[in-house]
Image (cartoon, rainbow over all chains, first blue to last red; front, side, top):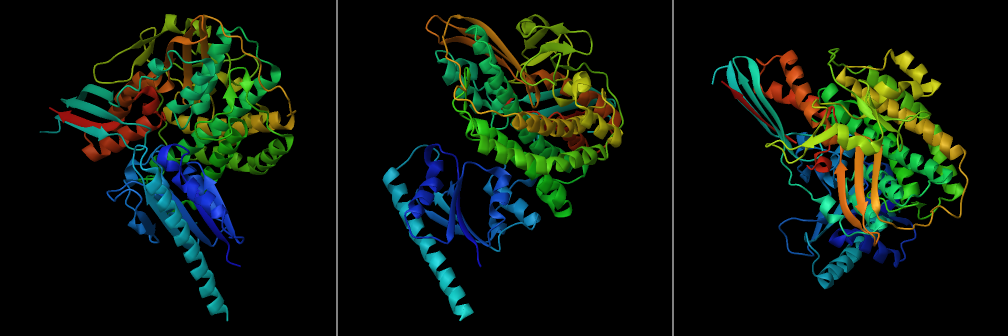
Length: 155
Length: 431
């Protein structure tokens, strides 16, 4: 059986708590076979939380040059660029953790990273709420497609 | 510029907490100037605390450091309870020790595996090291995670915990929760023993240096939350006398204050603690050190990594002892009666002695505060170590080699610049 988890990460402060909001919205849906989890800045320990699952959808806040509320989606973590020689425990974020997981061969078979663009300071709550709802719909659809594909493969 | 004279600058010191730089001037094959510059801006926490109530202080100081928040909370709580003349009941005393065990495991676990091990095994980062040594990294992650578990048990969360307060804790953990954590600790204890033996086998210099170790000393137990400030050169003072002997001063090239003991540099941290308190470690730790063929006290600065491993093992033994004797209480916190006065707190943060002084006014609010973190106390010692270590290493090495060696020496102290306020650009001038 394919064990699936949707895991949100982030601090409880300011807009960084957005992954928590998405997990809470997903709890209102009928996703009985999906484990919904949220961790406050887990660092590299995230790898231990993910290791029992075959499929993991990770949610985190993102700051890039995109407009507020933009949804990001990554399946290839090689996309992430880090300053490897500069790593410290304070700066060990999600990208660093996933690259460590890749080195350890400890990532789930299927890993999807969903990001929501936030701002450094507290920002437009309405816009971010809409982004959360849009991400909930996207994750539901992906979970459904994934289970349908498995059904088709099985039949 | 010829090899007799050069300037070398490491503009940002890598794999340390916070931002700093090293400026090295080499003249006629000798170091003419060596400056460890901490350039992060002052964080002004002491000023932020003015006007705050006792428990606001406990929550605020936890934000000084994401790695050692418990240390800041414990030094503050001790100082405030000193002012309010509050006795500490045995349950709270034991739980604070348990809380501290969690932080030592979490902080040391991160430093050994994420920051120090790549130096000893010659990798640019833990990510590169993990490909060849996955089991070592996984063991480190697991032990670090157990530390987080303990911090969450009492602090309600591991990052900037919120469970501690003046007088004790807001809530006592349920017996079942403690039993669950205890079971995990018992199962994982062999991993900590393996860690000590592995750290003792790391390739490292055998060079010894002259330095003074300073830490807390308690008559009955390995120091965490209580004790007198002692050194291996005869210092033995009450924590309220800190200012009379340990003097802070500003150097023009660093935003962090340096601290000297009677005008000389000194070492705080796990190696200093082990040097002065090894006799208080249980027989199980001594047996393991004998097996590892490591003897403390040690004047080899790189034995710091072994000292951290030993303290992880000790913290696990101590946590198991405390959890085995755990009894639930409905009164985890004593009532506070604020009053005016001056109080002192000094505990052993993972990186070393962390001293606080608070003055409270008649309204029970902070009138003034002072915080002396371990990294600022170690700063002068790091410069002295760099001076010796680079001369021993040889100044005719390439700038890249000098940079790597300098960073390894600095990282060995596990400096937290953000705490101190605030490492490495290396600038070498050869002339």
